[in-house]
Image 1 (cartoon, rainbow, N blue to C red):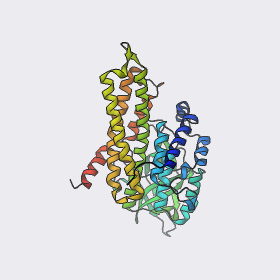
Image 2: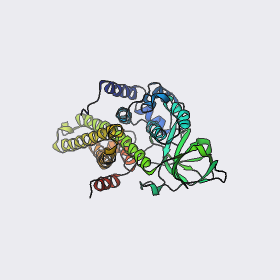
Image 3: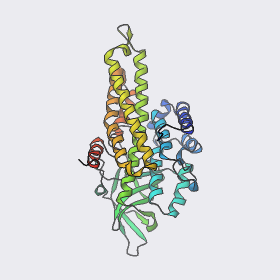
Image 4: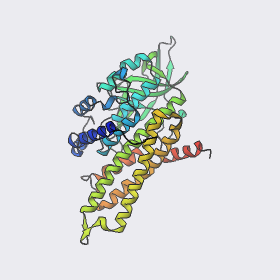
Amino acid sequence: MNFGFSEEQNLLRDQVTRFMQEACPMPKVRDIAQSETRFDQSLWNQMAELGWLGLIIPEQYGGLGLKWVDLTVVLEATASGLCPLPITSQAMASTALILCAGEKQKSMWLPECAAGKAICTLGLYDESNWIDPKAITASAKKSADGNSYTLTGVKPFVNDAVSAEYLLLAVRSDEGLALAALQRDQVGIATQPTIDATKPMSSVDLEGVVIEAEDLLPMTAEQLAYITDCGAVATTAEMVGAATALLELTSNYAKERIQFGKPIGQYQGVKHRLADMFVDVESFRSLCYYAAWAIDDAKHELPRAASLAKGYASDAFIEIGIDGIGLHGAIGFTAEYDAQLYLKRSKWSRPMFGDSDFHLDRVATLGGL
């Protein structure tokens, strides 16, 4: 079994890395994150033209029909530069559509997603720290004639809702779990403050919204779990990219910062912390790659693989963020310096699709403990 990347995947990584350096450097990231829309249409169109938005969408719907390992390459490379565009949200919504939608919805939505003509996002749980079907409390009540549903509830902390034209939001109906397929103008969206400005989140008000019956996509508990695991892998891939970038930033600083006549990187205390950061990054990197492979090629192994990767990364990335700031000294705490942005990303990433407590408990349960 070969877990190395192919030549095409390495070329893809180089392409994404070069794009981030040339078209979306950190000053551009800061400008987008501080803008009202938190979005840049020109960059989004370029990403669509490069095919990144349709990597895992089947060819019959305008995508490239590749696998999650290929998507992981893109997510890791874009996260290294803290890309603020909704690439992960688009991928997660596409995954949910492929899994739960009927042919009509797939034919209508997926080509738009692949071409970047529509931005789509996904909102699952109504309790930010509770990963369980019972945490979906928003409801859909069928009309007397059965042709429509009336929604109630609020979906908190929906990623990229502020820039999305379409939203897939988990609800509970009399028939069971489902995804409500909604357009932006059907719902109320209120931006919620978060620690990471490159990851905008919003509260979506569903109260009284009426949708057609065909826009309620049935979803089983098993499908919900699979989508959640995919989200955990996607988030971990972004954590790998961001943590690697912070390690490189900190290592370079340790080579340049002179204290007591020599670079601080020559001191044992600094070397040890950098070594610990490196070991942690490489550890959850390999776990992430295996989990991404399992999504397409070993679905029965995905729950354990996803939880091992996300569980490890959730704690390790925060420690890397703290150490990165600490090794920079006082300058690391300033808003003008980039190190603090990576610490904020680590804080944002930790609870997404399950924190370390959830995932490590799950690993123990799956192992029979």
